[in-house]
Image (cartoon, rainbow, N blue to C red; front, side, top):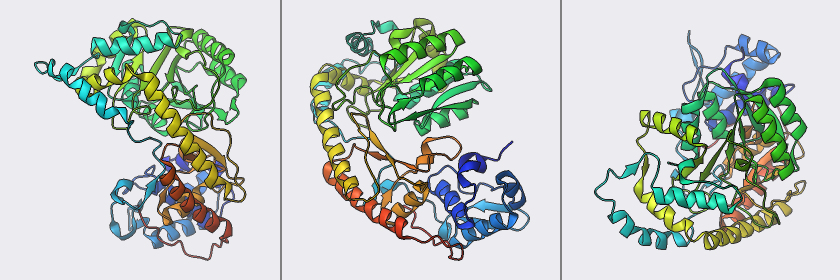
Length: 467
C-alpha cells in the first residue's frame, strides 16, 4: 500500500527527478494544502523504496525542505510537514495584492441586487417558519424543474431537492447511497473537491482520460463494463478544467453502458449554462435514465456567494436523500431560495451577462498567452477555464514560481490522480479583463523565470513567501 505522500505525488511524475525536483513537488503539495501542516512524512528508507530511488536522493530532498522551513526533523519522531518561521498559511484573500487563480468564479451578476430586493416580500411571508427547508421551497423546486424541462428533460418538482451548493449536493448523494470500499469512475482531469469527497467516503477511484478534444468514450465504456463501478462522476458540459463537451451520441452510449453495469451516474451540471459560442445545445444527461443524478448550482451563473444548488433524481432517491440529510444538515436557508426564484425567472438576462463576462475574460487570457513564447491557448467555447499545454512537465515549478510573483496557481496534478498532468495548467476565464491582464502579466514573469532557470541540485531550496 502506497503512502499518502506518494499517492499525491504520483510515482511516475517523480521518476528520474533530482532531489531538488522532488523537494519542489513536495513543497507544492504543502502550499496547495494536499499535504497538511504537522503531517508525518514517510521515512527516508520507506519513501526511497516506494519511489524506487536511492535513499541519498530522498535524504537530500528532505534536507532541502528542512533548510527552507517546509519540514521539521524530530528526534525519534521522523520528519513532519512545517512552514517557514512556523507560520500558518493565510488564505489567499488575506493578501490583497495576490491574485487567486485557484478559484474559477465570477463576481455577482448586476441583477443580483434587484433580485434580492424583489425577494423580500416573499421572505417576509416566511418569517414565521424555521428559516430553512429540508427539500426546498415548492416554488423554487418548480422553477428548477421547469428549467430542466425547457432544456429537454421533462421534470417535476418532486424530482428536485434544493441544497446548500453543488459540493453539498455531492456529499449528500454520497452520504445517502454511497458504499465504502466500492469503485468510482472519475474523469482525469476533474474537479479536485469531487475527488476529495469520493475519497472521504471510501471510494477507490478509476480514472478515464479527458482532454480539450474530449473523452476517450471507448475507454470510458470499457472501464465501466470491466470494473462495474458503483458510481461515475462526470462533467459532460464545458468540462472543468478542459472546457470539452460530450456529444449527444456519446452521452446516450455512456448512459446505456452505465445502466447495464448498475452504475449510478453523478452528472455535474454546474458549468452547463456557461456557453459563450459553442453553437449547439446538448441533451442533458438526465434524459437518459433514472440512474442519472444531476447536480446544479447558482454559484457559477449568479455569484459564488450564492451557496445554493440542487439535485435532480427519481423520487425514490429523493426520499433517501431526505432521510439522510437531517443527520448532518437541517436544510437550505430560505433567503437564498427566495433570491434564486427571482433569478431563475429572468434566466435570459442572467445568461446574457454571463456570456459577455466569459467572452471578455477569455479574450484577456488569450491576449496574455499570446505574449508568452511556447504557449498556445486551446479553443474555449464556454465554461470556467482554459487548459494550457506547457510543452514540458513544469506545471508544479511554474506554480511555485507564480507564488513568488503574487499569483496563486494550482498545478496540473491538482486536478488528477497520482501526480500526473505536469504539462498542463488551468487558467480561469472568470475574472474581469483588468484583473486578468494583471494576472497574466504575473504569469508571464513566472513563465520567464521558470524557462530561464537552470536546475542545479547544489542550489539550496529557497523559502517561498506563503500567500
